[in-house]
Amino acid sequence: MGFRLPAAIRKASFSSSQTSSKVANIPKGYLAVYVGEEMKRFVIPMSYLNQTSFQDLLNQSEEEFGYSHPMGGLTIPCIGDVFLHITSHFNGL
Image 1: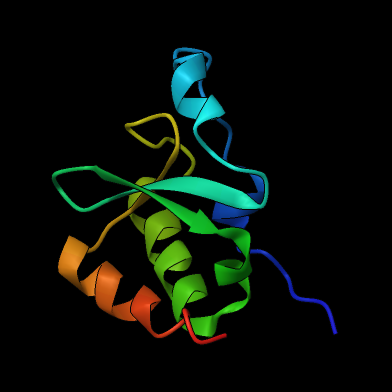
Image 2 (image 1 turned 60 degrees about the horizontal axis):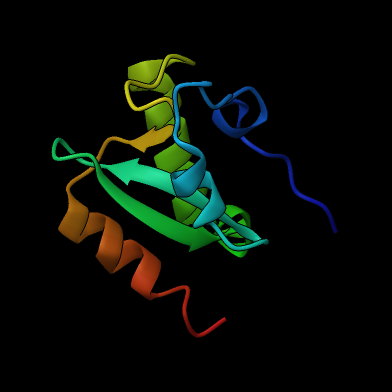
């Protein structure tokens, strides 16, 4: 059974101003997201994209930022502690 990626992932593009060292630090099968007002960077497994609660975060991101993310990457508009709480439930998968 497939899943449909939220538009925020389908159309998100990374700016050319990102340094290659940041991109190189992302292992295959992972992606970087920026969370909260402090724009803390998290490298998360792509398997999180299958989770309904993570897709809700992506939809919030799309509503708040559209396709123009301030960090050039995907920005999640929630408090870092909330993000960690939500994603901590995915680790058992």
